[in-house]
Image 1 (cartoon, one colour):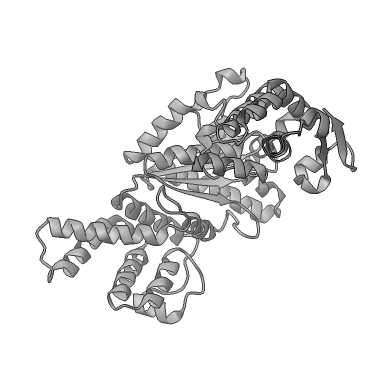
Image 2 (tube, rainbow, N blue to C red):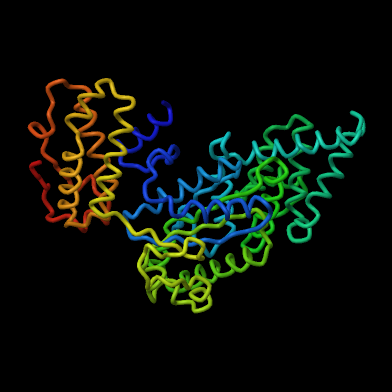
Length: 429
């Protein structure tokens, strides 16, 4: 019931639900087998890179969160990062790492789960030391020895990661919560951490672009040892790179190429890296094609019928919504709503399949016939304007009392560009 309510509330706001997406998943079954196999491989110590392409409204965010839920069921940690020129420039990997730790979540903990993960890691080290026969007096030294052993490989590339962990544990042992929190912030890539906390931990400066790779290795090690066999990182809306200055764009594309190469080299066991973008980003001269080595790494054949697309390929495409699939999603949402409605029979009767089809067609018409970009607005109208009213008002009949009105203020930029006119669009159903 709680999952259903969270999904319906998100759709009512015109947002993609954060969880419960398996309740809505339609048309994704053809990806399940390949993606599950990749998640299983990552849980066993492999690393995977995947690119998802789709036009606006094709369900890229829905897809990534659906995959995130499947990953969490395997006890993965997940981080969803919005790429942006100002907030998260891709060519500054230290910023990407910082956003990763800020958005880190697990099945048990919401963002940021970094502290919970680190604390669980130290608890695991203590349990392992006790299981090996360490007494209470020996415990700190034994934990220190285990820490060094577990981070041996990481310390070769980022010795300050292990140093900061030791500083964090020392601050906690002294009861200095302020210093401990500051050290953990530094470990998470936060800049401008108090100099006193850095001195206490024995680290210097701020994390830089090159250090971010080592810190990511360290985080993966800590995650694995604290019971999380993998980390799914989503870099969403990578197509925004097309709109940045050419020098920043070139640096970002090269950083992406570098990330892909590091994943394929096996440097990040337990990492599943996923990016999303529009076809224009992958195929256009202002995107991937601008850097031939990157284009070669992402090259995938999409010349065949989409039903023969290879879900194991490095790049997969989401075909987008047709009227038929949009109606299918609408009836799924209607049935989900009915399951918790106060007047389920009335909702089922007045919002029957025929009415859902009429509403889907009308919303598509309001967006210039572009059904593929209609899901967000369609579901928002279906839940908030139609199903809620039927459920609450006995005499409300959407065919008699509701006229679809799409105000430009409730549209995204892409949707606004597709609207038929600059005025409100009123359509009788």
